[in-house]
Length: 220
Image (tube, rainbow, N blue to C red; front, top):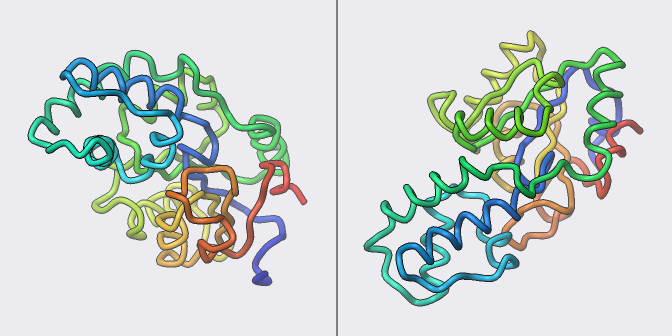
């Protein structure tokens, strides 16, 4: 493991879906609602979990490809999916185990906390507000906040600027190669959770400085 972790940091930046919150149940319901509304067969939640991570459009395209169907109605499906998802964004989604307690403990230590996600800004704030997590974060950078989303460094640098911290004093916590590449580009240390949405790539193969199975391990 790289010497940059474990240790305490001045700031912690977090991916959202698959890292802080298990959003797959609500995303899955919305995806199947969109598919069925447009006359397509549904998919299993295990597949939805595998398809999450590259945005709604890519997820819907993957679902259609799974059924060997053309994506001619992709944009209409996306609109229906987003409408349903925004209306039911936290029906079943919940923070992962020990997330809430760990965020509070890090705040009590004096650390600054931020979210850096590729989820759109409206959906990000709807979700964080619905789960009453917003008070934990000093910065929330969404997929449409910066010039380029992750894996570009732009959103991380935006968060670092808002928090007033250096990359060398910051740990990024994510669940995918997108997160690792963004952290490397920005110069922060990076740790990956092993329970997230990594498109089938094991957490210890993502190239991070370390992996954790429980969020509270960030306090060690």
